[in-house]
Amino acid sequence: MTTPLLPEITARLKARAHPSTPTCPCPTTTLADRPDTTVVRHAHTVAKAHAPDTPHATLTPRLQTAAHLPDLFLPPLTRTPTTLHNRLVTFWPYGTPVDPDDPDAAPWEAAATLLARLHRTSPPTPVPPMRGPIKTAHAIARLTTATATASATPAASVTAAACPILRAWHTLPAWARAEAPMPDTTTLCHGDLHLGQLVRHPAPDGPWRLIDVDDLGTGVPAWDLARPAAWYACGLLPPDEWTRFLDTYRAEGGPAVPSAGDPWPALDIPARALTVQTAARAVTKAITEDRPLDEIEMSVIDACARMGSVPPQLPPDSAK
Image 1 (cartoon, rainbow, N blue to C red):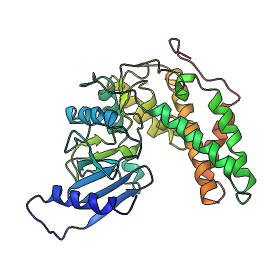
Image 2: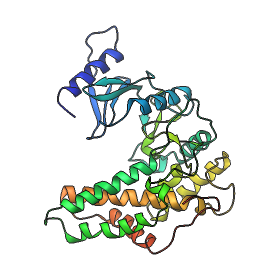
Image 3: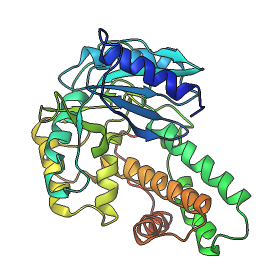
Image 4: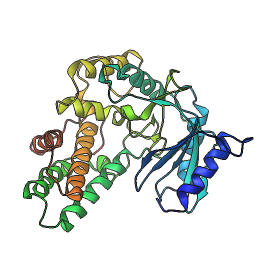
């Protein structure tokens, strides 16, 4: 984040949190600070600076959709973004996030329930396609750049790990690589579901709500189940947690998978795509940080190697 932007966001945030109090003792906390996203909290209000290339015309309907669905999403404090130093900034109430240090309390049932309800909800306002496949394509592009420009310092095994990832990428159908329209253009999807996208609101112990509307849109609902499905397939998510998530989604009438029987024909392509995305990001990060891959990262890359030799399962009505 550029130096002038953070102080201005903080000033706007304080004014919104305490409109009648010019000064206050509340601390301001930076919750995230990455090139594509910065999130700052003051008291019970949060400001988010979105990625520099975020279009106003696509973020606005996504904000309005969240505002229309307060039983599913954390509602924004305003329905249009503010522009500060060429970055779109939005304001939100603070919600209590999932505790990463308490895996036994992971709200898999709440996540599945919210997703099933979201997938059964007609978009209250026209929204763009969900951005899941585009994010995977961006991860591959960054991986390609990182391996092409890597110095001789990183271990050879790190840059070599790009090969099975790219092989797995090329087995995916065009829509999953963001090279063709998605086969479903009507179902409302989150686009980037993981447990970090849930908060309790009102804080600290209100009902769970979805956050992060940057990828919200219409598309293939199985994409929203793909990350936990991929973790399960890679051995990173215990079978009982995956079963809790899947069974709850089915019990709530979620349309992404059949109500009974094998869910994998619907999940296989999105799960492969999310595995590829995760592996690509891992290798890119390891090259940037000049370090070897860790055990978890290697397990995802090994999954890509297996995927490259086994054709993906295709639902009967899928489009390539």
